[in-house]
Image 1 (cartoon, rainbow, N blue to C red):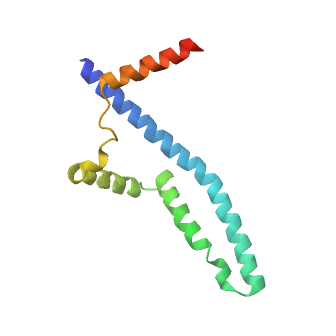
Image 2: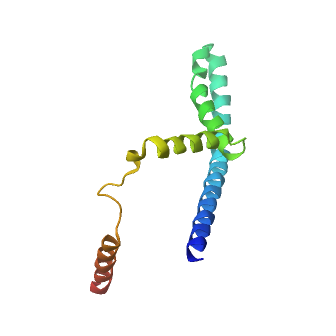
Length: 124
């Protein structure tokens, strides 16, 4: 029962973190979309005045970034599904990439950190 509760709690935390990431992306998109719109107007005006279409080139990378964030925030979440698939591939075939430096944390490591932190608090 305790393990089931822990798994449920971990899943709920993961869902909340995902929701926060999507919310952050939507908020970022508001500001970045405004920036892209203003940049497009300014660059278009500059291209017309200078009669040089090369001035419009910065719009291309900006549109890719905007599209990416739009899809993550409001789109079909195709990118999210692609990321999930890539993560599953990494877990299945390249798990050595996931190893932590100095190996996994142990209870002893956590206790050492906890004791050193509690000692530093009592010294202050």
